Length: 245
Image (cartoon, rainbow, N blue to C red):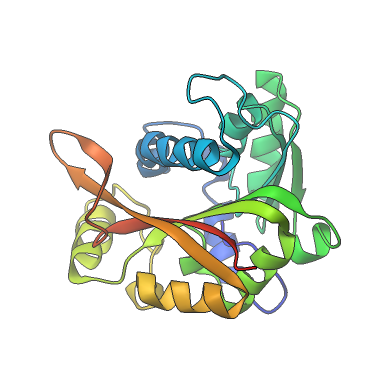
């Protein structure tokens, strides 16, 4: 799941997520939490796309004619919806096992997605994408600042970037590690709370890379509503980002 250059790929993280590859598309399997996160994330992404490019919220293909890069794509949980929204999608992941699962699933679904295993800076060098996404990935890389710099280099001058990551708070430790991993809802060893970034820390890295944050939204959980977008970013948050100039 963690995916970037030689300075930022963490081989242990890549190996961990690679072991989950065969189970990735099972909504009740080891990646069940990602399946639950996907609907509110997609809602946020769609809102950001329509706002950025002035699209019709009722349209079916707001990304038609545009390119998209998903960094740390896993087995394609986000790539496939982006393709259905009309984008020419490239998905990159550090774990070859994930890419194998992603290719097989996309082929079965009749989707043409360019999946690549390895370092995204190397694999996409010289290319710029209208949309760059990286969801629940930066907390797994060895050098977050270098990772952000690589994302900035891949973003077209008028492009849109969307990131999501857990906040480093007592709530996220309790929910994701003590409860989530402790009760087996998330595979043990998935998270290191010390590597979570606060919104201010991540925004500082983005600004240093020549980017600016235009929107921040929390991703919360309640027993009644499940995961949902909110103003509370103490558990997890999403950022809309674009070039500063």
